[in-house]
Image (cartoon, rainbow, N blue to C red; front, side, top):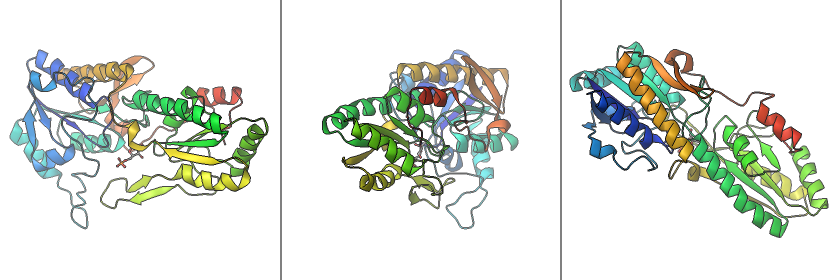
Length: 352
Ligand code: F6P
């Protein structure tokens, strides 16, 4: 059996741990594993190399992806030309030429949608859910999320001491796109006083009143704000438009925007920090190393059993799978009334 493996979309901690687990588990079953370079771009352009045990040795704890990745290439709508062109036949021809019996696609929502289309086009595909945003449908966790939350928690710990020393209001902007999971868990883990999520448009007046009350008590305030958070009636803070990309919006600037709105209303100084790609880089946490390993082994199991068109998923603490068709094009955001929101409320935190 010959199995291709690729990593698509934005990178995140734990990708190499999945590549290693998929490769070792399949090689144990006598399969050959082909590493496809730079996500679906490598499939489209015919770039791949065999992965030998030595290639995956020592990579468990390494950040990034040894295969490279790409978050702009969709072979079904290649935006290198205008209008975008369906070049999936070329990608399928490469898979056939390599003699692939199956493809393991490790990626986020965009990659799962593309993987689903390849499955429908006749390529046997298994998906593995990756993203720091934790926003894929039908899985309680994606690998990479725990590592991002750990970065946010550590940053908030550091910001808290300097904010306290100067009695400042300090804003910390997290990633997460249209979902607030990173800000919510990171904010709770880092003892933020205010947590602002895309799912709950905030009131500048309410946040300012909360900070002013703390200021009156001689307290600093730590605000953890998701990049997709915005005031009621206000649009997303957009840093850039990338027209060639499946999701052309690059978010950013939510913290600075709120900083500017708060500063005139408060006596103390208001400062902001954007964590950006520090949340995506570096070594995965032990939790993510284990989750990524479980996901890789589960993906190899699906391939061996011929269960295609499915994505590995964590439900509760059980590692199973769901139909790619049920994941494609869907996102999982923080639902109203979620237990962690109620916990934040119970602590008297401000949620906007
Ligand atoms: O989806 C992962 C993610 O890191 C988001 O949290 C963020 O909005 C986006 O990717 C950033 O993408 P890029 O690295 O292309 O700027």
